[in-house]
Length: 400
Ligand SMILES: *Cc1c(COP(=O)(O)O)cnc(C)c1O
Image (cartoon, rainbow, N blue to C red; front, side, top):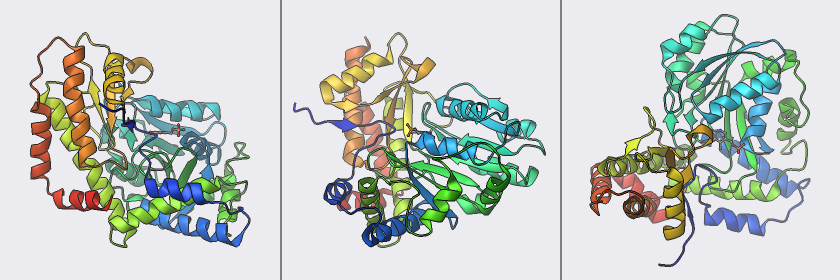
């Protein structure tokens, strides 16, 4: 059949057509009233999307740039910090904190695992200055217990900042940023916001802003206080990625429309959509006799363990060659052992059913086991039929 390219990767994700059009049409210079109005609106809307009353920054960068900023702006050399890691992105926090001379304590769990509140409590001390973790670990498809961990940090170490990489968590998971006391939450444009890579954003609490006054690590491009000052005037410290900001404006409009004019309601719908797609996918995968890689699967993506004796690279290649569908291999030491199907952002019922139908053929091609065609689809259909959010998913589908 025709090759119709589709991304099922946990970033970049499929693009929203309205955002692509907004990007293509945008020409304003960044030091104009037009751009300032757009940028101010985007920042206000992002606050609703994140669900916070804290100040928001948008910076031209990949997500990792703002992760780095969340280390350089908030720490001094020798600061004791606690990193929770169970995958590639957790390791990124560890390496960043080391690069800036922090004294790094880790809760280090195997890939696919998560950490209990007790395990975190055992490593958290009165001296801990910052706790770094992911909301969802994209390398393993794991959802961490952010709520429980946040509650622990706020109860036990009131001076510690809680910094969350929610780059795949935002828009796929319900997070009560202010209620749970999250000091820094970080997102990226190429995930649930349905636009290309190139923007990172974050929201910072007053406690975090205060820490920046005394933190001595060097920073220049990612100087958050400089960006905050500029953002208050509808500007950025350096040349912004203007066309991406235009795309972001259109994406936030789309999310607001999903919520019938209420951006927070639209975000809820986006989250429910990812939850349902993930649940359908898990059911389909299970019906095929495949195992989930994670003990605590996220709605952002589903990581599936490759069947015994099959390199997951073959599965990824088969998806691409036969169905023009891009799914992700494992990263680093997990390469060849798992494949990942994302549900972040602009996915609908047909995408979900389609990838499961393709998976049945892919599995038949790469393994020696017989596949009962339709079994993954049937399981997914049953989930869809049962879902309490069915009506919401249909509204989302109708508005695409
Ligand atoms: C995508 C992603 C990042 C950021 O990666 P960049 O390539 O720097 O944009 C960070 N953390 C998680 C959990 C991610 O999924």
